[in-house]
Length: 522
Image (cartoon, rainbow, N blue to C red):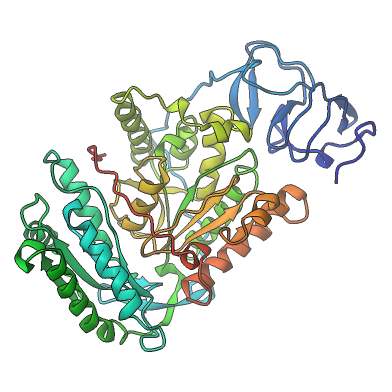
């Protein structure tokens, strides 16, 4: 609880100064006008009512000078008085992005944990060397024309064929209906869709696959099979294929699908969890419904967990390229070399050009909810958002639904739209995702746990049935970023081992869409 407003108290009683170079602080509790806070030996009187997540000035910021948070410019002052609320009225969004890179840029590798000291988890070892954390039977419609039948097969199978007591090593039967695959232009649209569906079919969280197609669409069963063959990616798992037109329509297809699932379940159940090094884990990091605390608590705590996974030989994937904008130079400066740094800039520039085709500019990214929570512009949002990826070096960039060539931190091209970017992370190999939220988000995925990490304790208490963990103690000052980060890491390990389910799994959230209306070549 904050002191009475008339009493001068240390800044930490009311607000957080993220970096010693900052000239603003973020309110962690309501700060009434007239509140006096101690900043070293000086006293700052707050001139406006400050709501949690918003900022007030720790110094007078003359017009034309930068307003700073995270030690970085977040805007340009229009004339900010000492103690004033930072708002769009007194701060413009003008921020310089210095993109120069030294030709000899070299970021050292992380301080890796010795293999003998690394954590382990219990997972499903696959023939390709990857390890799954779930074991699903997956129904894959090769186009929108087969989505209804795919859902029918999965729904009926889960209610009539799947019995956890009978098949203890199977997580269930699930479909990934979508609205892509026919009536679209050739080229990248088809390529990205096939790449995504193929990645789900061969994903280590999937133990068996039933492909279903109409028959005459652009992405029919033959096209999908040829795509997998061309990539030399055989599916070393039970597979069945059903053509709706060949099977006589919907009812015939559903009947065949149920027969295929019934035959597949005992085979998929034969695999059991075995110990695996944590280096076999790939973690996707995401955020949505962010607030002014997300970049101060949940995101850096997740970043601490991400750093720990990388140090233990694992892989971390971050996407939402629109939310790199304004902070891309930090990621580029952390690249392993200059070539990788330039690739970071290229992926952001590509997305700017892509957005411009639709009349959109990336500095309009913050939603009304973001702004209400204190994220006034894309720079503030991005500086907080990239904290999810920790502090280790950037190994490279990959396209949407493309798998990285090795372990470490990778940036995946993709939109900020949760229902498309989350499936992209999983198609890129993530066995699970940790999703930070300040205002509350419920999204899940068909084949992978999507764990929610709240930025504040109030939203966690309100939505406990949907949110897995809270980083709110960081805001309250009762736990450190390191403490919460290591709790997240251990929670991820336990979920990966099947010891506990994610709340999105318990609620059967199975969202799936494909970001396919573009070219994603980098």
